[in-house]
Image (cartoon, rainbow, N blue to C red):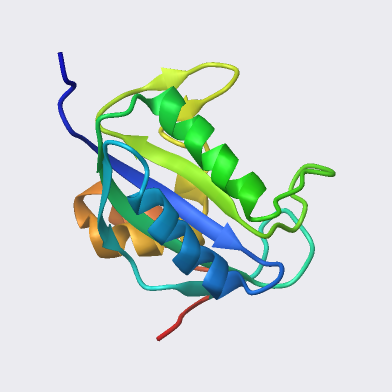
Length: 156
């Protein structure tokens, strides 16, 4: 029996190497995952690291539909990060590619391996602004007000 398509929102970020190219390549690679299709990509945004050091990030959010379960998607994202040269020498280290599962349908997942909705997404302008662009119903005015002091710039 085939699963139904699940709407998914994914955060992308990079601040090492050719960050914008890394995000564009990630969108293409995610679109090639089995039983997964990219429905939309937000604008790209430049933002300062939050709770971290290093160069500014380039961020975006993509909207998918998938028949994979959340854990299969997580493993696929981690494999793509590794292919992009991602290393994890310490928490919040600069990165060549970061792919975060933000929302997986209406699921609430709390495990050691995965938390959905993403536990810090409502604290970060670099997630909320591109998510609002794609799905304004997923972001409240209060959410946006709480992050209004975070420096972020929409890129063209």
